[in-house]
Length: 160
Image 1 (cartoon, rainbow, N blue to C red):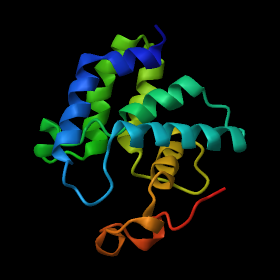
Image 2 (spheres, rainbow, N blue to C red):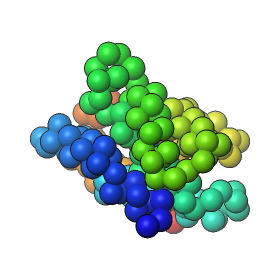
Image 3 (spheres, rainbow, N blue to C red):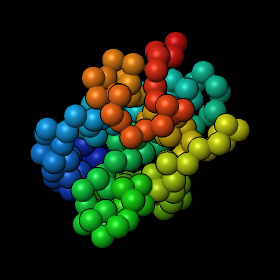
């Protein structure tokens, strides 16, 4: 079994994914489903290829799959951002999936920092941030007018 499949089969990953789905059942804004995580992974990988960033596909997918695991966690309830909480939760899942310590540190850092982005930043965190925003269909979202995101980060078109 490859490492991505190990993440998808991980009991904690599955438990948290179900919990997020249940918590967001009636949410009108963007949801944080497995479908969202896969969209982020695919968009990030396309950006990686188009911009010749040279990042490993498996690391991109693993990071994207786990980037929202901190949602509704005990850490978030204690005041921690879902980014920082996600990094804590991802660590053990990544280790169980077979990633080495250097890979785990890199991916957890990206998860923890995926809220921040600079135009000239070619880090995994910046790639994750960009893909996360591009995965959102603000241009057709009925809740967009009341969304708390500033217009500067709303995805108002299909980038192609």
